[in-house]
Image (tube, rainbow, N blue to C red):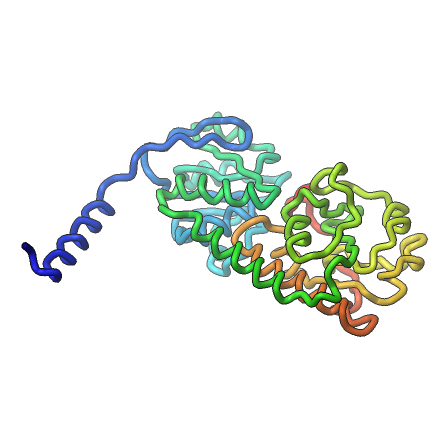
Length: 314
């Protein structure tokens, strides 16, 4: 019988040998129904959606990115990569010149067919719910040849649970309006933001029947009379001056959480930072339990319109 230390060394050598074997070929079916065959893990990746960029990095493959869209800004190391434009001005020629093994982009991207015509492998993924995020983690993990991609989801799930536990009882059940983009686009219950809000114990004034990110009539919000409003700084300017909004309880009592641009980016991206986003929302809800006006994180300031390329895309 082999001594225990020899057995341990033998097991370690077996693991190293297994890791050195080439990964099996995989077929990836994307959100458009296209199937992309990969003979080996992708080593050169272009990402044209911030949440997908963050997913690649969360799975330990940031160094494989060779280019990203202009709005990918996390983690900081992606800022040094070539910026390839946005939804309306994607630089197809530069993408081709980078010779990526695969291009990750949104389902709503307009350049998928052009990239495929150039012989590039394109995978369209656009998560909109928590379940979508779990699924996309697995698919990107397959693209990268990374085992146990669900470890990232387990961290997200634990973080959201911790954020939910931090919300005081006095804030549970509060009716909230979450505005995700200029033009009164709201987060519905079926969206990843709406699902997080529900996990935190809050109510949502938007009915599920309207879809994940519906465009809302301003009068609807007045009639719904939310007790708390969550809004990004890019959308908040002039909110209190919207017709009839002075009658809304949240506006009258100053219960408005205005998220800084970097917080807004985090909140709007269905990916690895959803736990951190839940913490931001939980802090807003916790402030609801305090004195009137405590929910406001700062006055609205004039800011440029939010670009269409940012997530989510209503």
